[in-house]
Image (tube, rainbow, N blue to C red; front, side, top):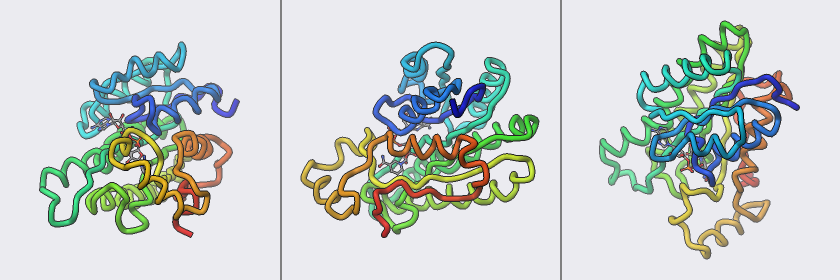
Length: 248
Ligand code: NAD
């Protein structure tokens, strides 16, 4: 078991078809006790129950500091520690630059970027006390290719911000034994894009990808498991592309 005795918190993890829940399953299967954090409407407690006994579901809005602090405090109260934080919550909006309202901008940047900062701020003191931890931040290929297939430029900006934040935290926290890494998924079939792309469009996109298919949540979960575990013990500040070769 790669994660025996480890405690992992995953934001945005309650969607049963999403990257977060696939990650929760992968980490739990390696012995971690998992805390799924999500909006109340996503029913995090029910999702955690699907993992079996010994896991926890908590309601929190990642954009609210007191929610982040309470979720981490509750985790430590329940399990006594926190070893792994996966900053996964995110939203996207298909917009052209001139269409982005200030409200759109705030909504998209708040969930991906402010959420990553707030949950990291809550988790870091716990990890510092433990003299170690792993933080995995979910960015996107949209940050790298200058524009998403579905997300607007504000989504690309938010996800590029996540990469900068992850690298800066990696440099700062390395001496404390805390590793911080990022994942840049390509196009992965989840609820975020389910109703937004026709089967024909998906087939067209698959033809442009060297591995000739869209990703599935388990593809990303495997990469997160690697970064969360000691298998990646000498990796910090890296960006792991999980995109089927989309950028080659
Ligand atoms: P998803 O919509 O299934 O999951 C996102 C989760 O975040 C949901 O459970 C949602 O309830 C939660 N969430 C949204 N706002 C929140 C908030 N304010 N507080 C707490 N939770 C909140 O989508 P997904 O595809 O599984 O996306 C997971 C992450 O991966 C996101 O950050 C997304 O941007 C990123 N990503 C996805 C793809 C893809 O193709 N699916 C590609 C690149 C990056």
